[in-house]
Image (cartoon, rainbow, N blue to C red; front, side, top):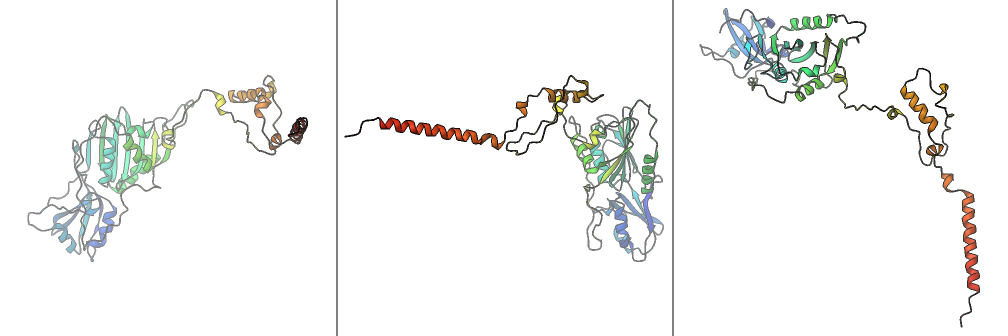
Length: 371
């Protein structure tokens, strides 16, 4: 087995304790790195393949026929290193720590899935037409997005041209890049333009949903190769890392630079309809049947009088004042129970019934008796 490439940087390293490497597997798993766990035996480098921080089922065969993982379990001293190595990515160039290619081939959503499946600690960069999106990952989890010249984050997920680049970094490098992103000042803006929205918190679930919904409908990216499965066995502790998938309360910091962001796309996805008539904003008077004590209405205002409208008011206030002054009182009448059951009306109906009854009796009295 050859030694790691000089360009590779270990995301984790330490000493193998006297009780063996098993006690450190949980710490190694927490790195979520896909790559290799490297150790030395008699000055010769050996390596064990990792997938998302766990020991992979498929391990490369050695020329001497020995099992590298079994030899690792036997060690009670020495140093180990965990190297992050990017998995194969079709139609791209680069090496173990960098992959780059074209967005005309790979869909942004697929590239983000690639970084998450690989447990990337590093940065995914998209560039197109002078616009740039930098997406930071920590152990396969999206943590920060920095946008330069992009007005709406969701637009990035629909890009069909441009370039991408994946850079694997150590966790320390990711943390320093994250701090650098947040500390960079926004470019100056003319006083006549609205201020920039610096940093906003966006729900991770919302980002994952939007990136899938905005996939370019005209094409799909190449099929991604599957990763090896993690090994299970009695000699290994059960996996303890959090399950894959975003937490409901997880948020991502989105940093806008170089352009006014479309904040509406981040906070409100509902459909809004705009009306030209201002009367649609009027509040209609309450008219509930059976209300016993109607509220007293305010004095009528004359729309022609200057005092009827507050000075400096807008067109909405003028329209409301005009409607208040010209609405007939009959349209604002509230039907009350006493309107339907008046005593005078009841007495009149009784007198009418009595008169009809007396008239019928008089008519019957004039009829000849029956023989």
